[in-house]
Length: 298
Image 1 (cartoon, rainbow, N blue to C red):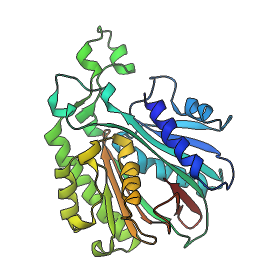
Image 2 (cartoon, rainbow, N blue to C red):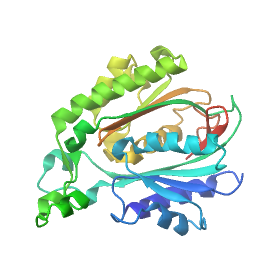
Image 3 (cartoon, rainbow, N blue to C red):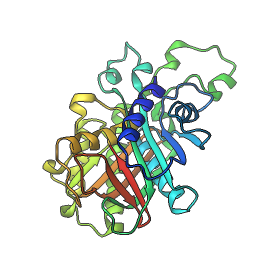
Image 4 (spheres, helix red, strand yellow):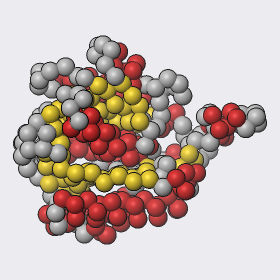
């Protein structure tokens, strides 16, 4: 289940993280919680032995990790907490209709974790800025129709097909390319980067066509695109941290590299983040936020 994968990712991260203080809060980005009620994050925090720290789920679907970074950044920048654990985890195999090949061949299960902590401006791994957005007019383009309050309030008997994930692929493709491209352009302007200055482009691992289309429109060559979906598929909120971990493990990311993240998901939601990669990408590393924060990523 999602909680199991989230626990595995978080345990590996915390086992190798510097002993710089306790974890003060937990944020879990997921569209596939263990239960509709309650959230999965409190159980994750308890399983990790973190005591009674605040813990919450966020449901921005495939944009969840970028949304989570922004949320955790705010919690740190406000001074409310010193270190926040962020986990992106999804188990799409539990949602897929075995008769629907259009979605079944695309998705995978996974989890990735990051640790955010206060730091200083200019520290290795500085997280510079975000751009986030949503468009609820596309709410039904990516959905699991049944199980929630709206389906239950309809008074109609539950139908098995409504329990499965549904996506209007061609329309979603158009929205994904448009929204991620626009978000990346906005963010690059905000941080003052020319597309040619981006060392690594790490998009949500939706499918290769979307990734190539966004990179082309933003002006980033394929040699600077970090991908691994050909091996693990679309892992939802886990896709960006898993792609980063994979690239770091292969020595692709170097200290000081300029990294651009972008994602698109159901809701509709989208978001981008700009950061400088930490100095030791081959091991447990640190990414800071807005001059006062750091994010440890494994």
